[in-house]
Length: 40
Picture 1 (cartoon, rainbow, N blue to C red):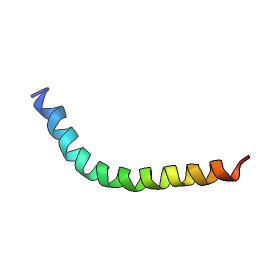
Picture 2: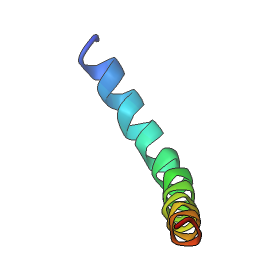
Picture 3: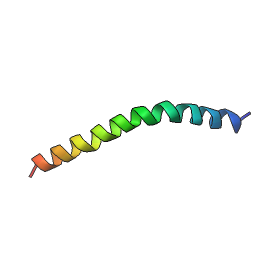
């Protein structure tokens, strides 16, 4: 159960998290790059 519990949880979480992360990841680098470019 120990191996199946975390594995199933990771799989189920990965699906929804991946979508949420994709949005955050896409916005995060974009904001960082814009801020970095603005700063000297």
